Length: 285
Ligand SMILES: Nc1ncnc2c1ncn2[C@@H]1O[C@H](COP(=O)(O)OP(=O)(O)OP(=O)(O)O)[C@@H](O)[C@H]1O
Ligand SMILES: [Mg+2]
Image (cartoon, rainbow, N blue to C red; front, top):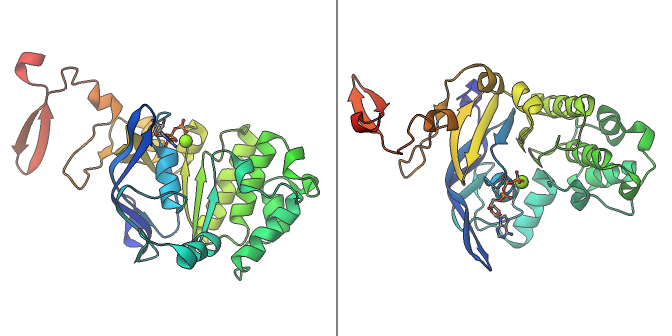
């Protein structure tokens, strides 16, 4: 955990389960996720494709509903939020950048008009980033008059981030915001997120991108719908130590490098001087 845990929580999921009912059967995309996002800071959700990152983010951004569990935003249980309450949370307090960024943009408006519209919808929070400044921060000033359909995939992605950060609300949730970008533009996106986070906006992003993960102080690993390790991005690359998250059912998921040590998937659990030690059972070595 980071020192941010002392701060007020902006968002939290408690024992969140999401089951999709597909033609081929049920898909358990989230299997009891417990996580807290304190105010300010940027948290990344990492993990393999299909691990549940987009599912977790869309539930957090109130674009999708949990099948079970509790979603708390800004100190209120919003699991059952509907109608005007849901609409107001989505418009005024949460910025959502979907994995396919064009889905979040107004196609008939120019780049700058998209940001002006975002500011208008959000009610222009005092002190926030103005549309022109957001465009500049993301390196898009020269494309201000272009409509999203005339922008490249990476430009659309940066425009979607700029729209999210214009008068940034309390919570920004961005699904793979650097996926389409070269190093320079990925850096722009990460610095822009850090800028609004320093002013108190809580940012949650998903990423496979080592450039992003290396920079962030808090990285959670989501695999098969279960959160496993929590560590800083730099730690992730440097050390073999990681905190494993224990969910509310008491299950602990080992990070992949630890899991490799237990090919038989059996562990001997010992309590030694108040510490829990996991060993490969004698017969499995
Ligand atoms: N609408 C849906 N209907 C059925 N299954 C779905 C649906 N959306 C996602 N899934 C399944 O849920 C699981 C988690 O998907 P999700 O999109 O959350 O993963 P992800 O970690 O974001 O992957 P990626 O890195 O590829 O974006 C996958 O097995 C996926 O096939
Ligand atoms: Mg995804």
